[in-house]
Image 1 (spheres, one colour):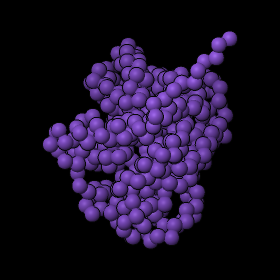
Image 2 (cartoon, rainbow, N blue to C red; image 1 turned 135 degrees about the horizontal axis):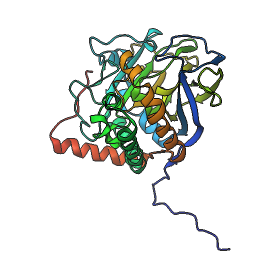
Image 3 (cartoon, one colour; image 1 turned 30 degrees about the vertical axis):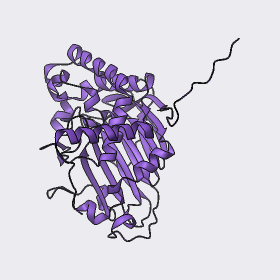
Image 4 (cartoon, rainbow, N blue to C red; image 1 turned 60 degrees about the vertical axis):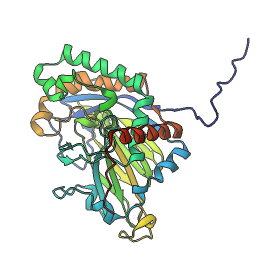
Length: 365
């Protein structure tokens, strides 16, 4: 039997990294129509709604991780990052533990790569300012290398929205009821920075369920270690039947990536102790945060963040959208870009900004 010759790659081009299906089509749950706040994970539940979800995991190539860590803005201090917060921004749970910042910016690389997107918000927080160019390029490369996969998912979502959802549900989805959805533009188009400086003990964030834009969600750890805990129910019992809650833990370090749907399940995050000698107000490279995590969410289901819309969109999410996304991720996993992909995207976006005559926003020093 003739042997197949190994695939040859051009010099300097690494193969794209396939993500692994870490957990396939698990079942998240809600006990009622909304999210119930409780620090205790129940042993058994009688769910009102169940939402399928899949978890993909992967690791950035070392050269790409190093390249992203060299993003100039990521070397800045706590004071510098704090100055970027909107004057009316509310403090969230992550920011209540030591000198830390949680900040949302946009990654709409095809439309506003170097400029603000006026009036844009996510979960009631300002998201109008563009992400740093290097991180914008990472997102651009990500959707480019997954263009065919995202297109297939987009077409399946649009068809199901038209066929299986009411006009009211489609209005809650947004984007003209899905007709205006271009997933290559909507996917991963918001980035939330979670940055923490100084030394602190271990930290556990309370269990919660995300809003609609986390139906398609990527999380990337740059610095620090954490454990992501997802809750799912077993079996396929009917209404009124109690089902055991199973916990799935995922250990994450620098370069770890997961893609999943935290809009579909209770989850919590545990951060390991952090020791950092540099004072939190130091400038320059010494001011770099000791924990750096990026969350990329999508411009879909943005209205599923207030109680009334949350309740009205449960059936659409449980029976239409969540099964589509879970199946797509399981059967057609996304791939991670390489350093070459990101550098190419960075050059493309730099040229687009130059051609438009709009200079990238200069953040305050």
